[in-house]
Image (cartoon, rainbow, N blue to C red):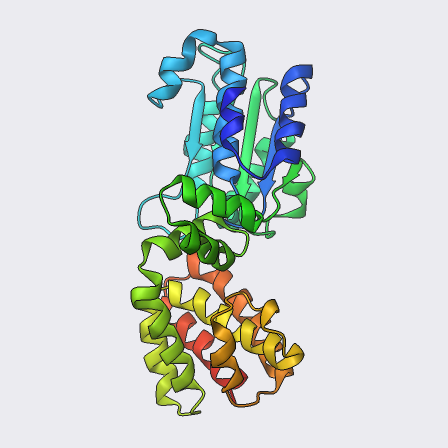
Amino acid sequence: MESFAKVKGQEKVIGVLQRAMQTGNISHAYLFSGPRGTGKKMTAEFFGEEILIQDDPGGKAYLKDRVHPDYLFVDRAEKKSLIGIEKITRELEPWLGTKPYRAEHRVAIIREAHLLSPTAANALLKTLEEPPNYAVIILVSDENNLLETIVSRCQHIRFAPLSEEVIEDMLTNKGVEPEQAKVYARLGQGSMSQAMACAEDGLFEDVWPVTREMITDLSSGKQIEVFRAAERMEKQPMIINLAEVILRDLYVYQETGQSSQLLIPSNSEWCKHFKELNTAYVRRALFNIADLKKQLTTSVNTLLLCINISYEMLDALQ
């Protein structure tokens, strides 16, 4: 189980999966849930590989080349915002209806299970109710939006947000400078993928100054700034995350006056000179923005969502 060593910060999860492997008590269905960037997909793939290798030691080469006949990935169709019913009825069900070719199990991983359409979810439920005895189905979900009947038929494995120390270490191992890694780890807020996006997007050179300027412009209360901000966010989604960080730091500083509590310490001077806000409005806006962000992966009208997020920011900054 050497591959599990590559998963960082999820020792409890790995312990559960290793015990299942050692005892042979492998469930027919698992739900891996938790925030984005916490290692769910990687862990699901490693777990699936370990199950098949245990059955079929000679299948490592097939797994390496992603051609093992008893391994299946179910993803959204190209240019689709949801996983449609055809992915379940035309791909998963017929595949599971065929007995294993090399191993003793057939492992299917449904990545982005939170994007299952209602009809696809209902079709999957039927499969989970009466799965073949050789089936192992792993659902990977960023959001807690699956049918309760689906959740109840899976062994639920919850992934916790990664610690700043874990993310910082992973970033430095990827060649990020230690001081920058410390800042990106904070901005990641428990997500390695979000931290990496910060590192790759030229955060301090480009995106960070633009975000601060956008917040200042929105604080003027002018309606036109809502649409300018929305255009910026649509072109560079990272701005949404950074604007959340700034709003959060403004809220914390105006509530506590303590720079040590800020996500980005360099925000302290900026926060000191920012006008006094109604922190209840800021708190409400942060909650609403987090909810709106969840829809960014499913909506075909990203600009409209960004306009709504901009209005939430405008209200918070008055």
